[in-house]
Length: 204
Image 1 (cartoon, rainbow, N blue to C red):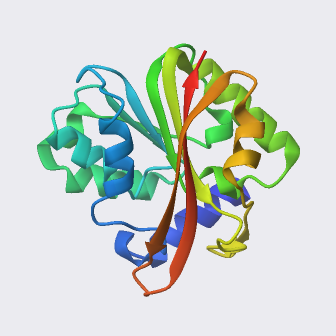
Image 2 (image 1 turned 60 degrees about the horizontal axis):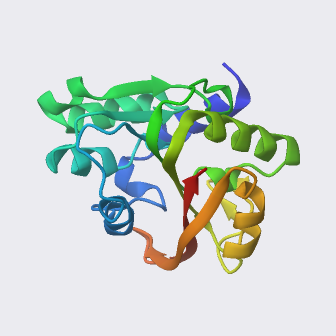
């Protein structure tokens, strides 16, 4: 077990889902961004780093039929699958580091809230861009919600990267067109604030 995986299994071993700072009972912003894309209910959607997120559960309740969740923590995936009850059996659960993910031309939407900012090295960021570029279908979408320039500098004991819409666009603009940006102030379960920038990109 590598150090990164050990770290996240330890985090979820010590904390319930609603005890991590980025937790949302209902991820309204992410849901709105996905709804506004006017997808077909059988379009493939994957939530990267979404092991403890309720996004996939909410999308399932809205009728989406082709859902996947990737997370490095098997514990977080197991918890969310259990929360979904019988619906969990229809979701594709992928226990993997996002940098080891291998998919080609598969997804109409890749959603990432609070995973990308944990990549702080240039080689990691470049590899992530290559992975999502290959995984999103032409005409599909990438949604990245990450810490803004006024957001936290550390999270879960780890250093993070911070972005503006402009700097985030500069990371992805080789194969994606920025079509929407918004800011979100997330109130954590501990009543602290985390500033996020949310960007929607179209794959060309």
